[in-house]
Every structure is written in C-alpha cells, then in structure tokens.
Image (cartoon, rainbow, N blue to C red; front, side):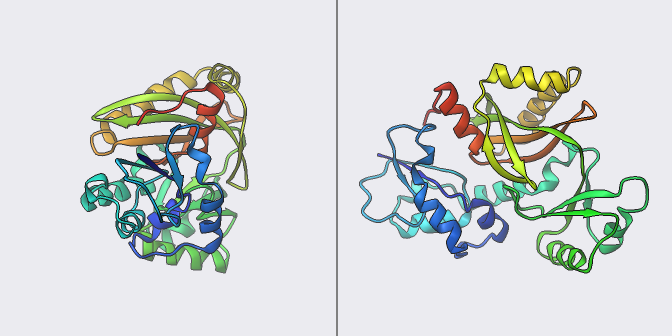
Length: 290
C-alpha cells in the first residue's frame, strides 16, 4: 500500500535541520486536519500526517509533501522499512539545494547579505524598498519588509539569521501584478513540466489558487509580460535540468512574479509539493504517478 504524508511543517523542519525538531502545535494540527489534501495528486493512497502513523498496513512506497531529516526520523520510529526512505546523504544534499542562495543565478538583482555592514549598504542608492528573506524558509515565513532603513528589530533578526543560516537574501520590492508558478517533476535524471499555477498572496503569505486552466494562465501572464514569458520559462527549465535534476528527484515549484514594469522575476524554488501543484491536478484532472 502507498503511504502519502502531508507534512506542511516541512519548511520549518528544513530550517532547523534536526531529526528531533518538534514544530508548533498549530502546524501539527493543520497537518492532521488536512492529511487528505494530496489526494488529487495521488489517488488511492493512505493519507496521513507525520503525527498519525499508528496502525498502518504493510507499506510498499512512501510519498511526502517534502523530505527532511525530521520526517525520516518519524517514519523510522513508526516502523517504516528503511529501504523506502531516502539516505541521510541525499537529505543533506536536498537541504543544501533548498537554501535560497542556490537560485541566485536566476535572480540577478537579489543579493546574499553576510554582515550588518552589507545590510546597511542596501539603502545606499535609489533602491530603498527591500524584502529580506531567511535562506531556509517558505510559504511566506521568514520574511521582513523594510523601507528606507533598518529598525532595531530588523538588525536583531538579520544577525540571528546570518548566525543560523549563513546569510540573508535581499530582494527588491516590486509592483506585482500576478504571482504564479511553474510546476515540474524530476525523476531518474529527466525533468517533466507539469503545468502552471496562479495564486494569491497577502504580505508574501500564500492565500489561495486561482481556478484557471494552463491556457488561461498563460494568456493572462502574456498580457502582462508579452516579450519575456516564453524566454523566462525556457531559461528556468534549462537551469533546473543542469543544476537540480542531477541531484534531486521529486516535485519542483518555481514561484515567479509578473510585475507592472512588464518583467518577470523569480521569487523562490520549492523542492517539494506545492498548493499550486495540488490545484493544477484538481483543475486539469491530471494526477501524478507514483
């Protein structure tokens, strides 16, 4: 039987990097209450959270929202065959790839900040509005919105983040007209494009997906950025094939912003399932295969 684990606390576990990390109770409750959310992606599985692994039948395959050392430890404690789980070396590689510095080649106007001096230097020049991001974070977590100057709280957060995660990523704030994602699946050295998702955010936090088909999403995005869209998709696909696929198998979501200046900018990379992928499967009636 296939076991499908919904672990939306994945990004928190990835940031901590400890097998025995315990996420906030709110994250645990959300996972338990929404364990079947992956059903459109993988029909016919057993759907559980990482905190409800009792009384399982014989499991022949494990699919997760995202892999991390915390989840592996939980599955081992539940008696899942180690042959069905990724190696520690693979999980170390996955965590390193998910560090936001990995995608800086796709973000030429973003910066990795390694000191308070560099952080203060962000506000020397015309660009005075920045989003500061913790390198291991996602779904709107680990973000700070700064205009003009750093506050004492900003400085404390930057210092702690650099100490724990090596740097802080600075991204210029933009006039965003549409948030969207390219959804992929990597397996055995090849990359398959799954489709598009269009979603709504509030303060950088994901809120919902639009109920639109791939054709509708593409038409809308090309109305915002008619000259860049195809080239950006092609560039991202080639970069993933060269830099991610040789080291990783599983779902990939690339979040982007179509902006008022008619340009498209890469926001982040998720080496895990995403709500956009779930929405795409539901809208287009295209589950993934195990």
